Image (cartoon, rainbow, N blue to C red; front, side):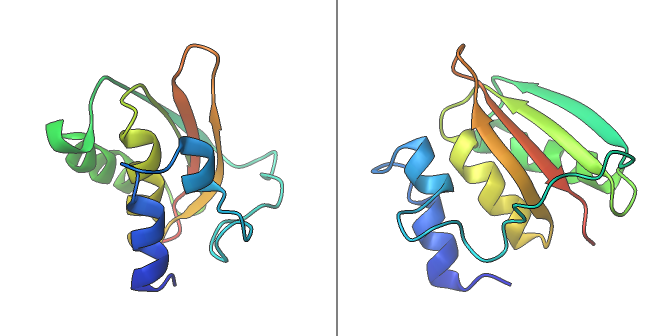
Length: 117
């Protein structure tokens, strides 16, 4: 489980870029699973559009991740710049595993989150 300082470091998106916030200079936080995703894990897709944490993304993410079976994966596409940083932190604070996070050429962020609890 991450410490409060780990979470605050990752959430401080106002002064850090997407890559730094999700992959700090000292390496990924210990709770990011960098192993490959099992081929048989079911994947649920969720395009959050322009939703941000202040406009309902957190509530919708909680609802969507609870509908995924334990060990299943939720692929989330976000377009809000702050959501690219805030959503992985929220997922980790809820006890789930961030399997991958990447930026697309169109500016969207794609997160793959495993439901762990």
